[in-house]
Amino acid sequence: SLTIGIVGLPNVGKSTLFNALTKNDVLAANYPFATIEPNVGVVGVPDARLAKLAEIFGSQKILPATVDFVDIAGIVRGASEGEGLGNKFLANIRESDAICQVIRAFKDENVVHVDGKVSPKDDIETINTELILADLQTIEKVLPRLQRESRIKKDVVAKVTAIEAAKGILDAGQTLFAAGITQGSDQEALLHDLHLLTVKPFLYVFNVDEDELTDDAFKAEQSALVAPAEAIFLNAKLESDLAELDDEEAMELLQSVGVEEPGLARLAHVGFNTLGLQTYLTAGPKESRAWTIKKGATAPEAAGVIHTDFQKGFIKAEVISFEDLVEMGSIAESRAKGKARMEGKDYVMQDGDVVEFRFNV
Ligand code: GDP
Image 1 (cartoon, rainbow, N blue to C red):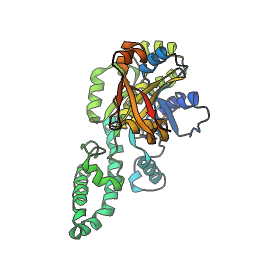
Image 2 (cartoon, rainbow, N blue to C red):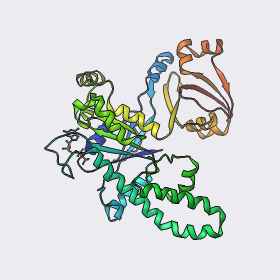
Image 3 (cartoon, helix red, strand yellow):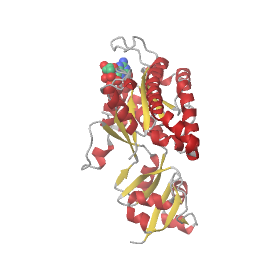
Image 4 (tube, protein in one colour):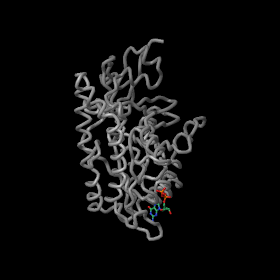
């Protein structure tokens, strides 16, 4: 499955955040026999629709979609120089599908900042600079050869042009993601086999003091630093405390700081979106469940997530939108009122589709 790598300077709260994530581990609760790797936190994506479906269908269990976060330890500054830990650090980032930077905004004299002062802007620049330098090195390794080849092989010309454009962006100190080179675009396709780091989608977690959680002006200012990436504001220590509490106690603690939902819930949602994922829903007496698919997935591809045989033998999908199903109150009533649609193999799944697949075995 797709993973999000967590990176950041030392002492910004990565471990604290990661501990909170693993305390929230949904694997442990729902899949007791799954192997859990020590540096992976599998977090449920909260989805209120599942509780509603469980109510309608009398489901015994609720299984949310999940996002995998990988704790990427290692020094960051000088990483691009490729020594020891630096190499491993970059290799780990290369394996991630998105990059989550944890940025320190909290002030605490007892926690040393590696650069002596708390400055989100400088920290973001420090990390991005390492990633940009690593990408420039990758490019410099292949570009001269490709430039020579392109004089003879015309099909290499477009690739060289794309790489030169990417180099220009990186030389100017910008990540490819920030410059709008998105996954799946033609330009990204031409760069794909270079496995560049900064073309991966980024998201930013600002580890802030509790009073900043409700400071909209502050949050707007920090968000502007990282756009078009999404910014999440949380207090890692608070998240860690929340993860120890039952739902009711957690709500009370959140209310006491003026916040509606845990930062981890936001992080899971934003992470899920950043990975280009969406869900569809299934429901029955056994379980109500959210299944993970790529945005734009077709009905047979969605069926394949449940079982490869469902994809191979796909006939059609009976689809009811979540809203319609809730309004009708049952599948039978949805069918009677013409709200259940039969969709074929070209159907592109929509968020909130409640589905039952028909297939040959
Ligand atoms: P890492 O090096 O990035 O993994 O940082 P840690 O999670 O180990 O945190 C470094 C120190 O900062 C620890 O002493 C934490 O208790 C403290 N810390 C983490 N998050 C917060 C926070 O939100 N507020 C404050 N005041 N301290 C924090």
